[in-house]
Amino acid sequence: MALLDVDLVFRRVDAASRPGLISAEHGERLKTVNQAAERCRAGMPWFCFYSPGIAGASEM
Image (cartoon, rainbow, N blue to C red; front, top):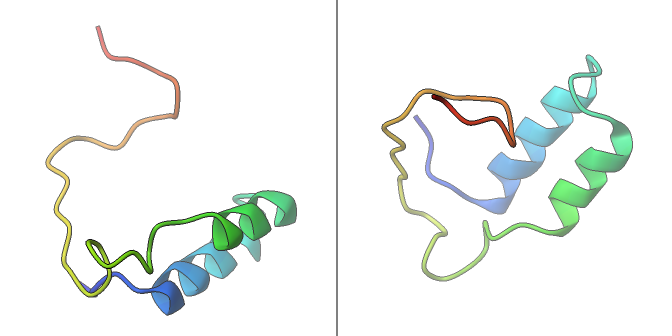
């Protein structure tokens, strides 16, 4: 577990870009447009209690 910060976002985006899980263009966009440095988010743990899914997909 790690606290949210810009460095963590960059490391995770880079880790997804290297093996081609996301495109370089998407990676750069994620590193440019994110809320990791926002005062209400930076340095805080975030817990999401739901199963990961595909963006845009909904469960029925």
